[in-house]
Image (cartoon, rainbow over all chains, first blue to last red; front, top):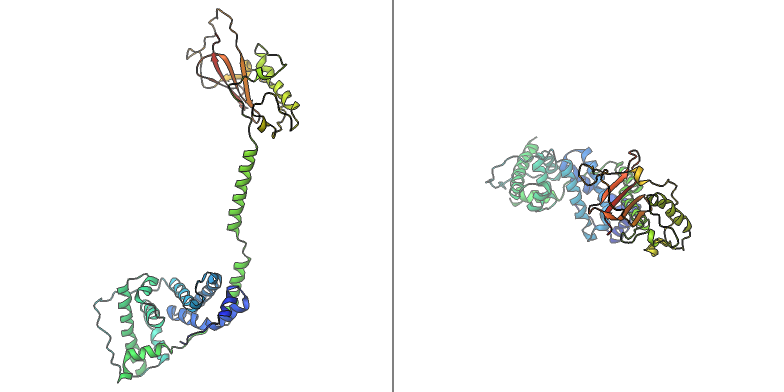
Length: 176
Length: 213
């Protein structure tokens, strides 16, 4: 996803609760927030709820943000937390063998982002959440484990599991 | 071969994932929620502020509305110049009225009643003239919780060989008719008296009896 660059003047106007500036920020970042929520939850209605709650909290708490330049990552964290809270019931983590085999990197086909997206959405909820936080959003295993309420080792094994499933799923989609 | 490496493809395509757009109504709903937050009266803050203000007001009025404290050592009757000291029970009978007259005479904020020892506090207080009838100690007061005859503290049959003379000191609070009757005769432990009228027991008295030699 392309990095979003925000003007410091816009951020200041948002901090001063200017509605027009808030709308501008929304327009610039709505895809980022919604995509994260939708991929985490795989549900449009829940994703919309998370989107609304995220922006309401962002606009209310932005004046407390110590580093305005970190606004985007802060918004993503809020969205991730709200997504986890909304999908708490569905996030179950299958018991996996801790001594996992490394993913075989050999892959005889090409795939693109669209195919990958389809495969991600087909992942089990728990594995998908870990994959989204670590592989897509760049959180460390420790941070992801903290957000999801699981251990570091569970996070690592779930990521490995997700990658294996993705590979299998992409191969299936390519053959279809 | 390198290009077909799964991890490499994965890393590359993760940056090129398609993005999803929310519905067009999304901003309207966000705006609604923001306006709701604005228009909600901060009841919690208001209630806390109102409670604190009420506490301060109550504390202020409690401090301001002081009850008159009389020094128990000073016999009040003796401190009134030019007034006759009654020698019988009628002393207690008439005393409340006299006190009321004193209080009505001292209606002016500036004047200081003679019987008051803490005059500086008294100036701020304008007592109400009591309209209640005088209290007859013999007829209207009973000893609270004590059967004197059973405890052998009082024998109404026994006759005293000698007449005894006593001085009486009476003090009471002005917000309630609660007064102490101190005499120089009697027992060590004070006897608590209360109104014999069980319906309105709004006053009490204590009698400490010490025999005058």
